[in-house]
Every structure is written in structure tokens, then in C-alpha cells.
Length: 204
Image 1 (cartoon, rainbow, N blue to C red):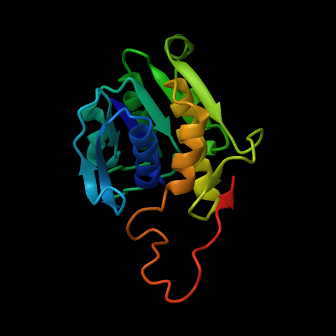
Image 2 (tube, rainbow, N blue to C red; image 1 turned 180 degrees about the vertical axis):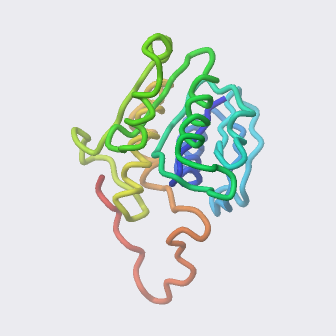
């Protein structure tokens, strides 16, 4: 299982990742908390061995999973109707990371203050057993581009690209999937472009 978590961008990142894995011929099963036009809904049932899930922290739902890999986008205080304070929130994210098994891959946004705070809270002995793969906006080739705008979407894409490479997906497939991704429902969703031309790809 591959879990995508964090305060923001989970649905988009999960959708991007599912498209990459699908185009790589891995035929994943996917569950996402939003409508994905390219999937025709919020889920797909594949015949491959990979299961990709949007892992939400609300009510500690992500603690129901034992993933072999996690993409962690960011951490900010959210869901005050469940989390009493930041300490409880970070404790839940710690437990989420501790539930890694097998490959124990943690791909994370190294630019995010919340994630860096989380890593400092993890005992060194725990971190030694986890394979850490940070990502950030620098040192990436201009050949990668997106069909959706926003600096936040670039960061989402970097997490996906990092994990896809770890799973041996070739660069040509990743590039094509990133370019063909058209976003998710209710997130900068283009409902009617009229006679306007389709916007150009956004370089990462």
C-alpha cells in the first residue's frame, strides 16, 4: 500500500500518482477523497498489486493503514473539531509514520516547517529504520511540466516524481503522465472554456 498524507494536496497528489502508475502499466487500485474526471469518479479497481490511498488524518483515519510508502506533503494545524491542539496532531502523524512496513519509504516535502518539526520529534532509532527521501523545488529538470497551475501543484508533483522513480517507473512515462494530468474536481476545475484555447503546460 502507498499512502498520500498531509494537511493539503492529498487528493491531487494521489490522483497524480495513480495516473503515473496507471500509465506505467501497474494497474493500481486507487481510493481518493475527491472526484477525479480522468478516473470517472473517486476510485478505480485495478488488477495490479499496488493499492494507492489518500490517507486522511481526520479522526486518525490514516492509522487504519499499514503502508510500505508514504508521500507526506505538509503538516499544519487543522481539524480543531477533533485535534485538541498541535501536540495531539503531531502525535497522530508520528503514529502514522511508525506504521510504515516493508520498504518503509517516507517521501516528504523538505521545505515544509511542519514536516521538519515532525522529524525532530521522531527518535533517532526510529528514523534509522525508515528510508527517507526529501524533495524540494530546486534541482529538477525543466522537461517536467504540468497541465495544472500553481506552485503548490509543483510540490505535489515533486513528491509523485520522487516516489515513481523509487518504484522503477521510467522517466518518459512520468513526463507523459505529468503533462496529461488535468486536475481534480472543485480544485481550479475548468468547467467551461468557451472559445478560449486550452492553456499551455506549466513548466516545473
